[in-house]
Image (tube, each protein chain N blue to C red):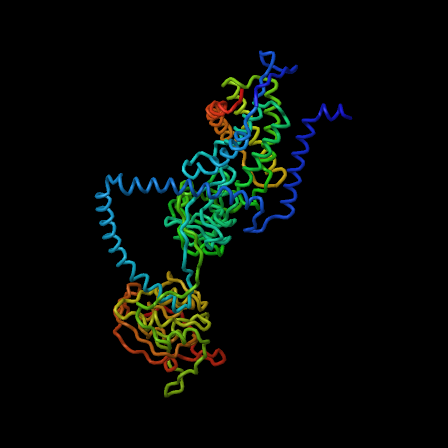
Length: 454
Length: 182
């Protein structure tokens, strides 16, 4: 026996060490760590190493900052000039975009749309990596003592970086979006197609689950979709660099992350995201009645009758006029689109699209004027601009907008080339209850018509 | 603490005897620790550094210098577990993946050190190249076979990485030779 042990001592020790580690692996696989859970030994190891890494990184940064701030100032004047010019350009862009933003916020308010806002962030320095090709995790110098928690988003001004995986007292582990175990809910900015951005072992990022019959352009921007409940919606993720047909029914789309994940040094950890309605302080006032009318359930109105006892024709502005197909099902155009829209701006026909959507109507901005309203949209501008005459026959639609509406002078380029379609003078519309025919399906009314305006 | 000369019947070297080196305790403790620290810190600044595997080189160096399989496999085990501690999230990278790989590498390197001359640059280049490929293969086997993880094996990538490690290894081994005690 002694001879046997002596002869195979090396192999026995090797087998014992391997066996112990395999058992350890099996235990860890059997009881997988939950997200954010940390083994004590790893906590000790990272806690022991973190001060060393912090010291090295901060010393290096101090030296670099001292050099670049006080000694190496070559090109600073030129850079200053370029930055000033860029600020001027951005001011012009800002003026142009702010008007669009105001319009979008107004629409969001009316829809009770809640946006996610990044309310607070913590700046952190990257102090380490996994050091291997198999894993691309990063370590940052902020931990649980600074308020970092697992599953917080980590971003840079140029794009998202990843999410917090494990948190230690003085540091935290970040799983980048190009790690093979990472997955982020994203959407293509132009087409709004949604998919999942997955990392790979070689550090590439691919957008998955986009059907192969979809058209994806090279260079298209990818943003977060907010579906993963980690990243707020709309943050830049990257850019499409290649699109190939993949296996099964999906495209193989390669994305280059916006943030330089292999050279990221400073990041922002999003510690708080809040859902709130857009700030509308600087917007034109919106009447409470309009908002209430939008949110309250619809009450069908009785049909008005004329002297002969026939139902009164609907006004072109009313929902009845635009729901001639009978599919509007309680929708109405929003006042912002028809009545309370900024009077100093022409209201395009497509402005009814976003506000009509939540009511469930099949709204499409591409529909043709006049005939398109039979599809069940709200009061679309083409119909309004085209005049009430051809639409008065569409008496079976639903009218649920009792408030008076104001139509601003509008030149509608989409309207048919007849005399009515050019410019409609401003006029106060009558309450819809007085204009529109019955919405009660039990009461017969004039049959719907889908005739285009004459 | 001193160089011992050990006759070995199965030696394939031209020498009759192979030298066995010892190291001071601080060197034994701090060299692997510094190697792991450099491995996790340098990639923050140097993009392609992760293809270099300093803990593997240190394991090979200690194993071939001591020429003791038990010592080699224990050294590999400890260095590998240290590397595991920083390698990734526990859900995806449980402790022991690098530990198993470096345990086997340490054992084989020390066994090989008994048979061939590992002092000259040519043999060091070849040993590092071969053991890097083997290390990648063992890691792949553990991840794919034991843990059912999706792993991609690329021969070209492994070959280029092994070449880079073999070249860097020559300088690392030359530096670490200073810590050998004669």
